[in-house]
Length: 379
Image 1 (cartoon, rainbow, N blue to C red):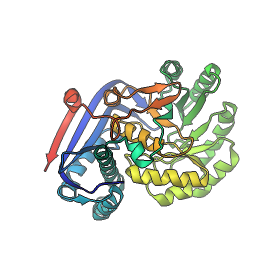
Image 2 (image 1 turned 135 degrees about the vertical axis):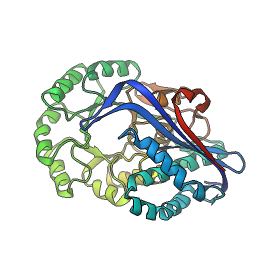
Image 3 (image 1 turned 90 degrees about the vertical axis):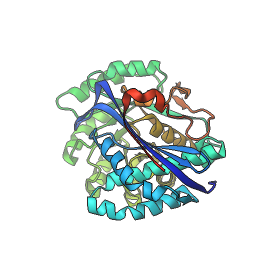
Image 4 (image 1 turned 30 degrees about the horizontal axis):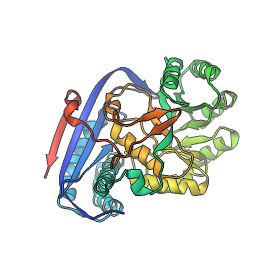
């Protein structure tokens, strides 16, 4: 259900926090953490929040916020909105020329996705109910979760710390030269407890030939999924071949950017991982979740950024039926932890939500001045 609203105000915030330990991937690293937020307010004072994707390269956060400030005000302020899906479809159509002319499909998609998030959050707050219950009346207040982003140098210590924090599943970054992957996988697997799960993420590191060389190690280590072993736009035949040659379930989706790609990828992905801030927002990712369920795949939202997107992902996973698990970054990021302090959080492998309206949090922007890089307001 969605009550028609009129948009009166738009705020765009950019935050950046220095961290002592970069997030490391097989292709590069993230030396700081950024977050770009949309705050949309309706004519009655109702508010909703959305987060624009922007992990890598780090400066893409500032760029996408600038793009949002250029593209959104004329399309949002004064708009009468009946449903987020219809409005965002129309918004995407209006911005199509911008996407083509600027060759920036990704940045435009992420701005539209954040707008969709904010409108759903606003709607749930206006309805006085948690977003997951607005999307599905009997949605649970907790979802299974895993600790993500384990870096190669300290992964064993992080697994133990995250186990103490309540996690029962962990995702290790692989794709590093030498015997790093084998050493880390062996050490983590040796210390795992009954019922725990181990995922790996290659961050698109391998060619098909290289991926084939990893199969024996990963099967020996009994990993529960193999995320993005190859580049997302590798030929479909390469994906079919790899899927047919390994018993390890394949996972991916964060770098797929339309429904046609997701439908095709269901042929080889056992775990489907769209990113709510990178493409589709709430409506697009919920459609992927439903499509995945019909095809036998499992929806597991990708998220490795700030607290607003994490809470949207958690609410959406709760609303989607199935056995999916929520990605929660294990790396230092005050733009995540500061925002979710009021959420119950992890206990025995479950991420617990609260009963607050909307996504369950109100970003404490006044307390985040240390990290604020810019703030623009449009009426």
